[in-house]
Length: 200
Image (cartoon, rainbow, N blue to C red):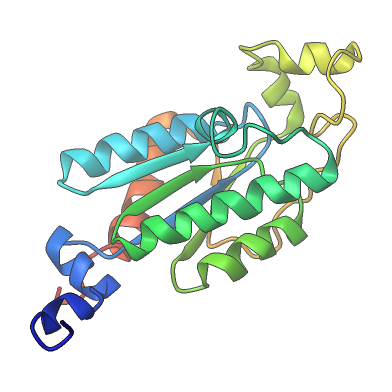
């Protein structure tokens, strides 16, 4: 049987799939406090890349915790597992040639290092969405900070759970001092350079 169908025994490489899609795969890991603008940046990036003919997938707290991470809570151990699973899923997408956009708080350097080690430094691109907690609280459209301050939500990042500023992000975008358009263009410009096909 092996001699009759030899072609079926060879695995397609990530380079084969990238060539098919006309892009290099990448995991764009957006890091920042709740309300910093991660989700907005993720959606704007995805829409821009779609308009330019790129295949993408967003992973965030909503779609991960409603499925793959449904059984996890917000303890330190579960947060780490949340990131580990997100990184493993992202790695699978990257191996398919897809640009994966992760919008996850990822509060500690340890957790971010874990994600990078799973995905691989070549494919992991960390973007710090920089915004002071005071501004994030002002933007609190879901009322999460208000509930956390009232003690209704425990282990809320920035209130009673720490957030460590990334030490060496690949890109920093400050949504507190720059316009949405400026931040969008800054992100898109950097990502387009990273996913440019190998022969260009």
